Image 1 (cartoon, rainbow, N blue to C red):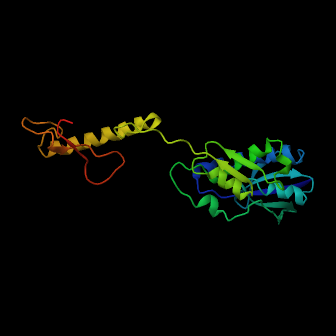
Image 2 (tube, rainbow, N blue to C red):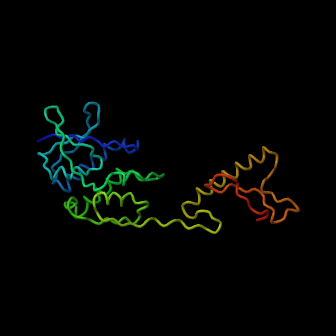
Image 3 (cartoon, one colour):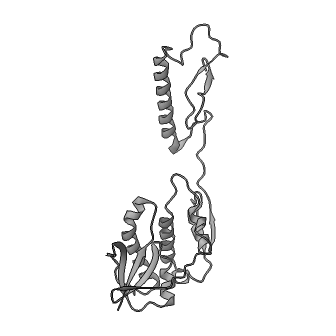
Length: 240
């Protein structure tokens, strides 16, 4: 049997990079069982020239096998080990577009792109259409698509993609976020109040929210800074 070594795709996410070897080995096993008839041995982590690889054994891999393996989410390059040397194998990925489609969006809480691809691959391999993933235009539905990372990965594969974002939390009349966002908003509000009270105390102004006798309702006194905003403090009528 021939021996092969997979070079792991680098990841900018440190936490994901630390788990890439284990996840890559599991994904290779999923491809082997679903579309390669169990042809690959269990992948093991190894180092060649100080660089981490996943090494596995198989009968000679042909164009069909390498076409499937080219889409492993952590696949950067695949080599056959020949007499201590690395012979590169041609990999033809399903990708229809430049990877900017996946990576250009940057925002807090975005799911790692490689992990998204892994999840889509595992879903495909667990379906009845696993053997057709290379040549059939499948349809992917993500009912909680967020900003579309999974949908964009499906488009990269040339599949039809549809999704529905999570509905935004309702906002009560006072403008605070409802549901799961309310505790965080309340904490921010409390921090702003404490900070304002500390500043007022240092300035000898007492309670900035106290309504003094004779103050009309149309007289504005300083209120807390609106959560999530910068700049001037919000104002509210005295007694409101």
